[in-house]
Length: 68
Image (cartoon, rainbow, N blue to C red; front, top):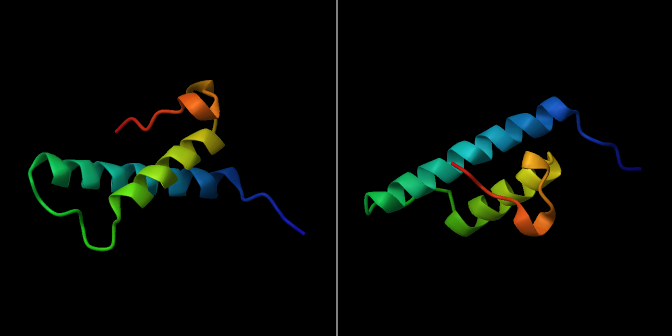
């Protein structure tokens, strides 16, 4: 019996992954290691999926962006 999560929960997690993604990108820009516990590829994929889940710019799966 699956239940949808409240939209506020989804938006909170989407915001968190937006911030994680920026932290990973910022570290890369300055030649540093990503923050401990953040795997860049995983952060990217979760940010991507969360943007798709919330219909970011009404884009289809293949065209979703992960703006930071």
